[in-house]
Image 1: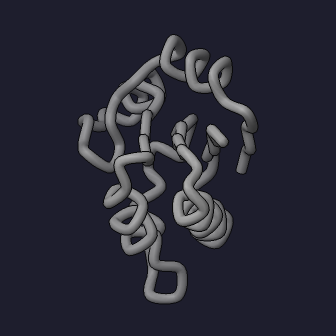
Image 2: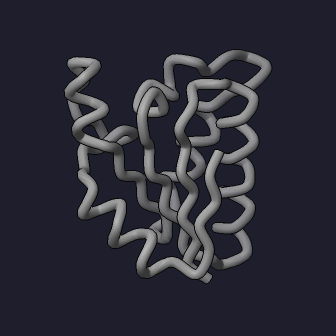
Length: 107
C-alpha cells in the first residue's frame, strides 16, 4: 500500500503518534510519504524526552520506502531552510502524493 500522512500541527503527541504509525506501516512493507504543511514544517522543534519525534524520524528515514516533503511556501513564511528531515517541496509534490496514494491520513 502507498500511504501519505499529512502533518499540519506542531502538537508533539499528535505528531509522535503519526510517526509511530508511519514506522509501523513501513515495517508492514508499505510505502509511506509524509507531507509537512503549515506549522508542521517546524515539527522537529517539539521533540521531547516523552515524545521523541527525532528518534521516530531517524527510524523513518532508514527505510528506502520512506519519503518526506515539506511545503516550500510554509517554510518561506518561517524563513526556514531545507534539510534532510524537512526537504522543501511544493503543491505539485503534494498533489502527486495524494493522486498516487492508496490512503491519505491527516494529523
